[in-house]
Amino acid sequence: MLEILQIPFMQKALIGGTILAVLLSVLSLFINLKNWSFITVGISHAAFGGLAIGLFLGISPPLTGMVFAALIGLFIGYISRKGDIHEDISIGILFSLSMALGVIVLTFTPNYSSDMFTFLFGNILTITGEEIYILILFSFLSLAFIAFFFQKIMFCCYNEDVAYVSGINTGFLYYSVILIVSIATILAVKLVGVILSSAMMILPAALSRQIFWHYKKILASSVLISIFMVLTGIFISFYYNLPAGATIVFIYSMTFAFVILIKKLTGLQSV
Image 1: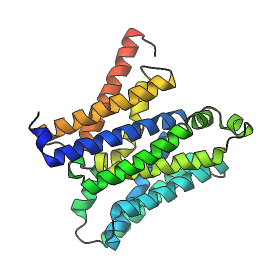
Image 2 (image 1 turned 90 degrees about the horizontal axis):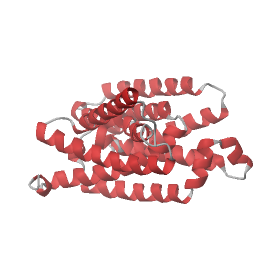
Image 3 (image 1 turned 45 degrees about the vertical axis):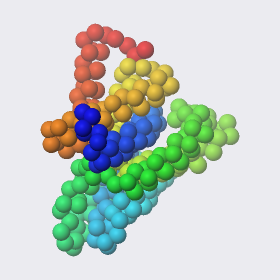
């Protein structure tokens, strides 16, 4: 165990994984309260188009993916608020359009297979020092913003109409959280990939809500459980030569299923 901690790339993986676990688990609370699960799936898969464009142009795929995901996220949010098209339909259309664009662009991109495999399924063991600094900066700014507006964001999550009447700028908070979620989705690509990044923003609070009912307990337990799951997944993937992202999500999902089963068998309620 101690020998592993001396390996530089493992040190970076553990640091990056811990930071991502904290950020994604905090966002998970709002995603669960607002029932944004499908939105996060749409954003994460739509980012595929942005990553493909980055590979084709020969510039940083995470950068183009981040811009693309942010635009798609804000557009989904706009459609959702205006209600001209049902939210699920708009997400499905943008999801399909972005994936189709990504596939078309990749056909004109030579030698993309290895890079795209990493983006699709993630590999936290290859995270660089520069990426950790970016992750720390974004996480600090995002969590500072959330901490400052926490009560107002929670008010919006429970009843946005009443929050608006109370004088809260609900539009600003809505689009700000959507933007943070969109960028966090791309940052999570390094941990679990495009395909599984949405799971890391759904599972933490979903699991915690099976155990606790108060939002403070849900938030605190989500952070602690996520850190444990991510670190455990990284260690197991290293020992058994498994993909880290898939291992983390698999352990998380099995734990969630186990908790549900125990509650069904025992009749326990959230505390």
